[in-house]
Length: 89
Image (tube, rainbow, N blue to C red; front, side, top):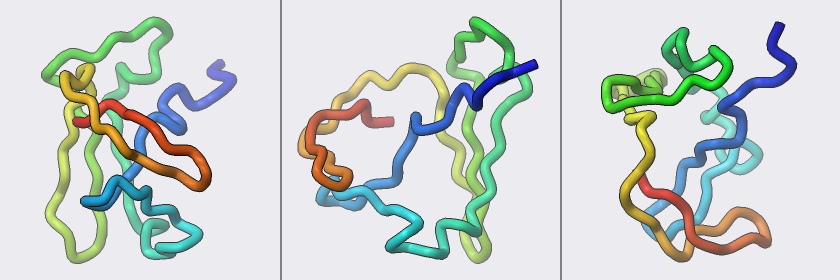
C-alpha cells in the first residue's frame, strides 16, 4: 500500500513572470483534472519521453506535459516568500 502520493508538490503553474498560480488566489484551479500513467505509482518507476502528465479543465484544450526530466532551468520562479530556479518543462 502506498503511504504518500509520489508526485505531490512536484509541479506548479507559473505566469510569464515566474510567479506561481495557487488555488487560494485562483479558485478555478480546483476544476483542473490530473491524470498520470498507472506506472507512475510503482515504486522506483522512472519516466521516459513516452509518459505524460495530462491536465484537463473546462473550456480548455487538453495539456500533456512530459514526465521525463526537463532539460532547461527557469530562473526567478517564486512561490510565497521562496524564490529560485526550477526545472522548466
